[in-house]
Amino acid sequence: MAKLISTNPAKGYEVIADVETSSESEIKQKVALAQNAKLQWKETSITKRIEIIKEVLSEFEKHSEEISLLVTKEVGKPISEGRGEVSDAFGKINYFLKNVEKSLADEITFEDNSSIHRITYEPMGVTAVITPWNYPFGMAIWGIIPNLLVGNTVVFKTSEECPLMGKLIEEIIASKNLPEGVFSTIHGAGDVGETLARSNIDLIWFTGSSHVGKLLYKIAAEKFIKVIFELGGSNPGIVFEDANIPEIVPHLLSERFDNCGQSCDALKRLIVHESIFSKLVDALKKEVENKIIGDPQNPKTQIGSLVAKRQVDLLDAQVQDAISKGAKAITGGSKPKDLSGAYYLPTLLTNITKDMRVWKEEGFAPALPIISFKTEEEAITLANDTVYGLGAKVFSSNMDRAKRVASRIQAGTVEINGVSRWTSCNNPFGGYKISGMGREHGIMGFRELCQVKVITMNK
Image (cartoon, rainbow, N blue to C red; front, side, top):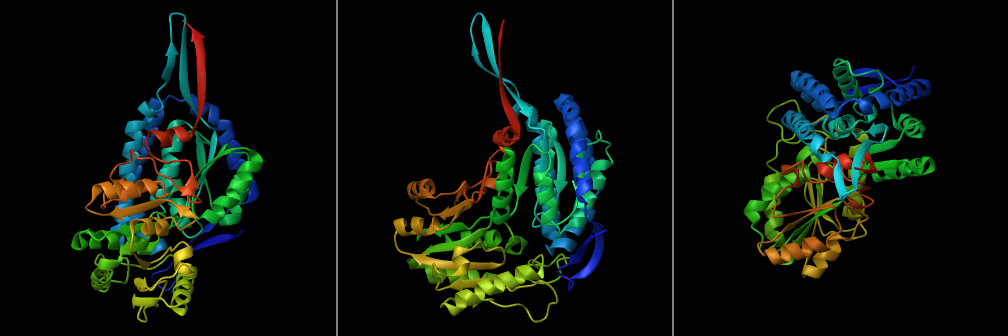
């Protein structure tokens, strides 16, 4: 049987272990079990479902350090960030547990002396949850837990880059003895995900690239089923001349270089007023060059490796394309010579033109193109000059201007002066344009996973 080989991208791609790839017959069997279980799980009270997921959370918490270390080994993320990912995921589970019941409570839309009209929220059925490698535990939690809580059964597949994480999640959830078919895991690359999507499922919940999202959307259209997609991003950050540079530099660095730049919702393009351009670039350069790059299992490391050699090669191709067209690498722009694995120096690029790949394509790595602007209108035009629309940032002490600009940026979330939308899971998350469809989190996120039914009756 074919196997997925898990390697450590920060240790010269040394082999960690392997996982058997799921066969077509195994996928069909697990989907069939999920279909058989969906009525029982739907009719299990929400109170009982919450009770079961609380037990799952407790078991996850017992394995917290094991999960964190596996994130670091399979993805190359610094251990401090791996622990942060796991802790954040636990916080999300607690939010889901506390808010699902009230989010799905029946709503009375009309009532008179003789009748009552009510909205109810019912589970969709079987959900294919397909998640990426950049937050292998966090993204799995985002997809699996809300679906189980609202009453959907789940067949889960994580990325082929982190098969051991998929296996560990499977083992931990299985230890809590959910009814057969309510949750199962399959393993494999894109072909396995496609087989799952073409199976007898009722909903696709997918986080990943826009390219794969389009392919899954076509499959869903043929089957006429719903999708919830959170896809790629090329988030702009607009910095006006009245922004406080010392305050925003740490925020900009975190938003671009955390997780080695491998986040859909990361800052991808920096758009700076010409009057402070040089000053901000110099401040960023100074801090970037002080970053500690190296073994992600070392607690002192701030920037680890990328997930795979192909990501390094893609980034280098994008950077070299920019340089060949006149861009200047203020710092970085190459692979470090003293590290073996999927490493790339954190990179700042100026002299950016809109024909460069670093501007047109999603940057999923530690490189930041920086461009200047003169007028507010020009800044907005540059921000919207992308097929993506996941998030954006605006920095200005003039709140009227900041709010005006935020209203004109085509993105699902706009953060002003570093106030993060991630502070609260109450906020719905998703994008404009090819950054996705549907929303996760908050009341809206729960309801996206449900059928909306109206029941009218006499009193």
